[in-house]
Image 1 (cartoon, rainbow, N blue to C red):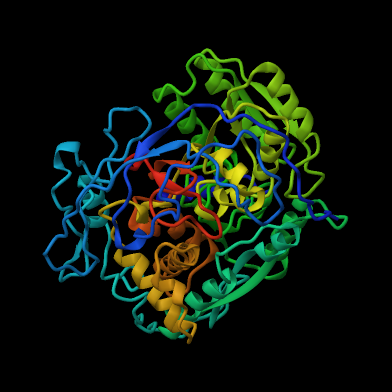
Image 2 (image 1 turned 135 degrees about the vertical axis):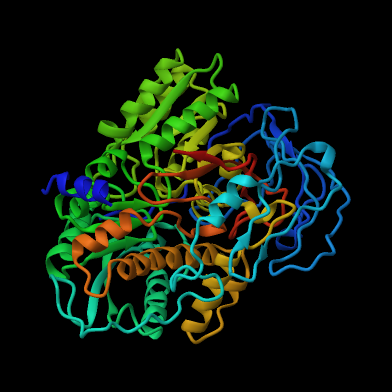
Length: 597
């Protein structure tokens, strides 16, 4: 605790036009094959792609429109494997039954990939996977191996905000009458802010999200806390600060984010701010090392912000620099960079060219590569297209065949379309979870916006991130008790049955769990800070939370950055059940989760 206090005290204070449909010029699809991956027989993904025969690649890409996929079916870059027979375990459990484990090809050709996250080899294909159980004292016996078992054993499930049976338990009333302690902490309330990115704005330019009403989710979990009697007699006072999802309209996107930070700090006097969706740029630094306000985020932020935050920045995924270094190491281990020509596509946005690009270039150069950097302009918005044609032309001229696109959900589809338009031979795409690119809802934007040719062109992309995306497509998939509890609690708190919260394949299910996780972390910290907490007390409690419940109950701890990442591949069409959303593509894990930190 003393060390945490020292660290905290030494920190410094401190109009878009809607896109039009593009007609693609002829492009010859290369013959590079995507690794063979077996189909999933899990209950969550039993529907197969409508086409039973392997389609033939067209010589030319059809015209595409912004939101409607083409009717033309391209070749599947991967080779579909036949379905092995399955067995179902007969044992009873508090979580759904597993089917058999089948190895997933991770691209190395040795079939050593693992389907369920445990140490299951190819010779064990016919054995049922173990299933997780809840013990009498409320602990979860995790079937995914020793690392997971030790992680789950570290929780105090008797804590009112750490149980798995319900979101919270009533706390004991304080012995004395609560008093106001500091700005944002009154005698009967403590103020927190939800930084709500307006994803609905993306529909104006042809991008459609399926995450649900995120602010309602956060507000519902705050209501649950207050319904438990609050925390030591205080209620959580939730304020919402909206952030534009597009920018433009005469205001730079980071100016808008900075304004949201200042409103959070100066108007609402928030003790803590939280964000379910990514808030890139300068907002994290504005809140933490400049504003001395705790900031909780699901997605990773900047490593430099994390270092300067002095324990005030709590993210459930690794920082951008750490994630990129891990991504380059993965690519090198897989042999994806050997004798290849590497290009980086970088937006002129804050904390790209002057932060993560440097570490990416250094990591590649240390491996003997000479990457080229191709800048695209964003004009102060979240959609970066200026100079995209020039960037692609330069990559074509240089013969780039490995691309690291550091682009967000509204920019990457334009890159793919431009590559198709210039008939660039399909490169190997390698990405981290930067700007949530490792989520189905984000990766699907390529095919949803660019149509079938774009989906097929992007198929085979490698993505290393810290989410649990695509786990439901593997045999042996189980929903975890924390995820189930969060979604059940949300449906009850919203006082209406929300069908998608029963379906772990939806983005609503994942988003609900993320919102649940952040609010629980805040509640735990406020509780641990005592009956009359101070801002510093809450900050120290957040920094020293230790183990955190997150989506899929994967290992994640505060302060020491002990997080896990997993390798995924995008496949189009999806051979492991239905594609995501209105597309035929999906993300599939091709490795076990690996711990970082």
